[in-house]
Image 1 (cartoon, rainbow, N blue to C red):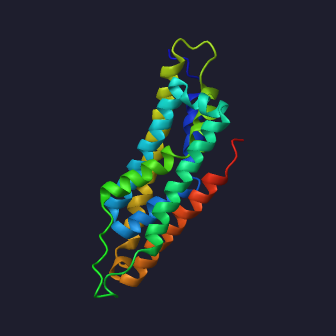
Image 2 (image 1 turned 60 degrees about the vertical axis):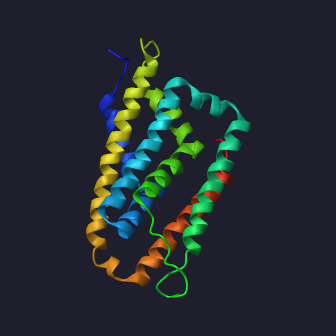
Length: 211
């Protein structure tokens, strides 16, 4: 009715893309090791919400504008890269309050911060916008009566499936991390590892090409 075709192929392709190891899976795993199930779940939901922004942008045509304008693409990727490097460097350089008694203990990361870091990681990545722009229209008929609605439905299906997979990753990592969190030194290195991941992603986003 909406002009969507080969829905089964879309779902299978989406699942295969979601289970491929990548930065999102690494971020969710890191937050689960650091904060447990709630931290990993919030990270997964934040990433999903970030992807929904790109889905809506694709449906209304903003992604096409981003793809056509090299200036807009460059601006978004530099802002996104700078943001990722900023939070990554802060995490890498965070001091351990337990080993420096004269320093106040560093404030633990909140679930709100975890959510927004996950969401902004996706929102500020123009490659994700271009991915949805290239992937979703392949499953919509040229003469679809409501192409924007069809794109929106496909995007929501993709994000929901991806979020369910990410919640599974969060649960698995949280179970494995219960004993790890008893070691303060290990958790410091996990935190620094997450920070290094953000710096890497920031540099990669800033240096990426439009094609």
